[in-house]
Image (cartoon, rainbow over all chains, first blue to last red; front, side):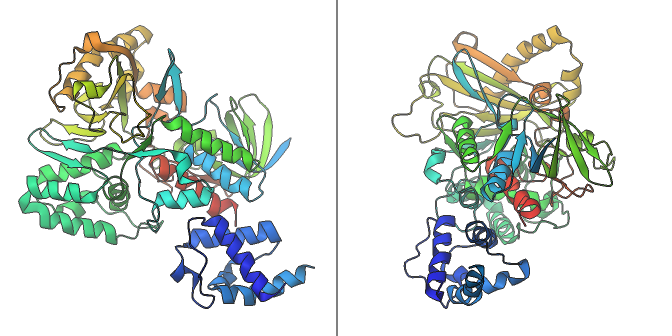
Length: 84
Length: 467
């Protein structure tokens, strides 16, 4: 999995969680919460969907790694690649 | 013995919402409901081919799409349901009617503000400051300390009539405490009723319940109706097993109970609730549901949804000495909403709610109970009518169907002690009990109303069974 593919996985999850959000021009280096109407419950759901759909575990202490698409990609890509 | 990840007690709004969250994320969850019907305190039924709602007057917390952090938008996301599927129609308008003064309000807050300015010109500055206090309060905090709402309101509003008029809807919709309430709870109710608003599906609550149950089924949730939990064996501060009404035993890693705080405590083999916390709620109500051959608009009562009334010297929200307190109450007219054109009522419905004395109603033998209901029926109508526009309704002739709940009805069908629909005065806001795998959701966790109770189930499931 590449970092770009990883970003798309995260965007797909956000699309499912918040179908009313406009995702077409989300800036990868800006905090997701600043661009989209996502609260802590939504972030919990991103974590839960990563586990459910992809078997990826994100400990609570590391939720901060998911602040932007870029940081998601940095943090999650190795986890995806460790699964195979 | 069947074993679940989570057992949920109660198939009401909070239980089903919790179940949806848990099943969606792969938990093996079963909802146990003693009644044959879902919905709990917000259920539905039919008599003589007419459909009725048990609890629904209007759904509070109505906001338009896109309002950040509003509870309604949050639950839509958390449950993965679409707004359109709720089929909500907004209220036409409501009113707080205290005889000498009327305050209209609607889903546009500016109406209430201008009404306060009109009826209480010397209070409008204080009212605006109160609204800012409400907006500035962080109600996401679970553990804020108790503050008297009366004291906070009196710091801004110096006219007791306006103070009472503000409290009346917030208490009826609803408070579990007499006379005063926690300011945090005041904020939640103020937002849900005044800053947000009222809406209702044409078909009442059944559409919402069916939507939730469909979603719950889709995500693999299990549900057993006519299957109450009779007892929970608590060993070393843990629920080891649940014993059902049938005697069958089941196990669950976690139990989430929407049965109420004292009710849940009563199920446990080891009791954990302090006596002071364990008092069942003091507030209970009667509600009359009168059906007329013509829609209410033919009597000139088609433009209002909810009327909160008081004719007493001061508004008194407490358990009355009489069986029914006619001084104040709530009139609900299901027609008063902007339904799509093809949804029209062929008959008129008027619901009237008043404070009631549980002990008196409980004491009546069956025939006296029925006679008392019939005796209060015209008195309740007369009391409510005073606050409505002049109408030529010959109640005795034009009312073609009638039903009436008393506190004992609620106790019988929802197994709530003393018929306390708003639960105990004590709320367990974190949902945590001294039993390590037993948690509370619903009314006694503290969130109220249809949206509130769904949010309660969601929040408690998220916090205690998903991490």
